Image (cartoon, rainbow, N blue to C red; front, side, top):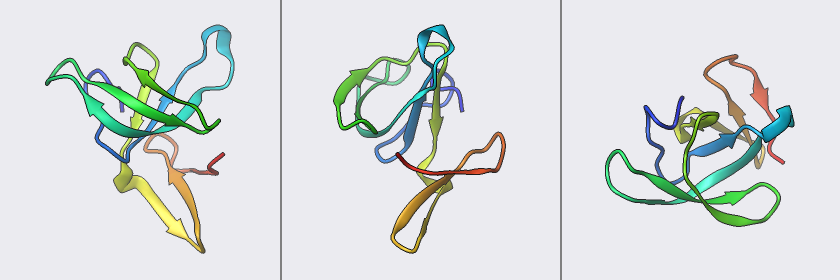
Length: 88
């Protein structure tokens, strides 16, 4: 879901496209900051870094409700494709 139209909540996954067409950066929303319509997020990125992210074009939210837990690992089913993706 487009982050500008559908704000995220704590625990949702966030994907941000990389400049130049590289692979998207992925993480989990640790905290929602700002008021309605001006949300920004503290994100724990898959590479271990933590930062504040201000959504822009190319930021996508994957709601926590779409995550499945199986045999101790977490996989994400994206709404667009329905295909599971492995966490990194």
